[in-house]
Image (tube, rainbow, N blue to C red):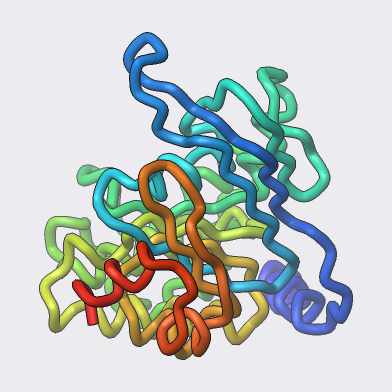
Length: 263
């Protein structure tokens, strides 16, 4: 039954032809250190259903801070953000509702070292979604197979490679059956040979129609998977374009400077 539900969710996503707005950020501002550091300076972005948006930019540009505002991991002081039609405010009910619909994968894996892989993946569905243990485990095993590490289900995180741990983190986020996935530099802590397996998992999600916002410097992923690529610098959204235009015909000098350093 759980397997049928999961399959249906994926099929429903694939069958959606409309492009409703899933994330709408308008004129978002954020200050740090008693209003002395203006880290986000009026950033606006709209992400539609099934779209993959890659956010690039130099260190300190505000890109990670920006996507963390989408699920209230970072507060913002001015502007407006709505996620799947729910306005993000100080209302804890709204924050809780949004966090149930938004999965996030971080640079660090943040797995519980004392729990097995299977226990890490089932913890939130059991306690937050109130799923029965058997149902949560059935979904978790499907997801572990999906990300290519089913055979690791009974192991502990410390027994896995970095790439395997990150795929557990992706499975854990998917176990909540989110409508949106956020990735905050998911491959930057990995050895080069482990990057491909994580990116392949992300490519698979994109093919299935998952709405994704990815902070990453993986140019190949952005070129082949993204619907749009965004450059942030100095707390501003400098440029956004389709991958071909972004990489081959950038319009802004700041974009050209950034690309000259990474290509």
